[in-house]
Length: 148
Image (cartoon, rainbow, N blue to C red; front, side, top):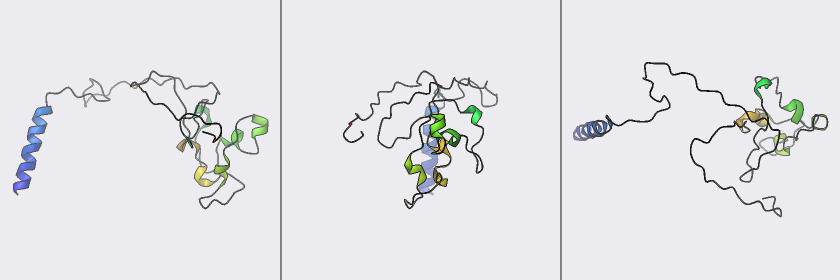
């Protein structure tokens, strides 16, 4: 019981100390009861140029728009119409990695592994926006001898 009273007392002190603070939220200055305007949809980078990777095994980003690809589901994956082994010669798109043709036990498959079928789980598009915060991240230096 004593612990409960102490916890409630501490909560009251902490709450009253922060009650007057102007806490920044994603809603901005909009009240919780009001609907804020929808955020602007930014332009998707569509340069078809490979981006530099910052660390080994980093999935490459998608260098083109994919909004017309519709939903990837169990029956259709529009990405594979250009990036699968069978289509890269005609499309000139990079083929998906050999790792995508292996199951969890390392057995080589004829088709893309079901666990690698949903591309946007790992590969993402980029938008042309000003960064929200300063970023001083520096990736690993490339070593041609090791591939990194």
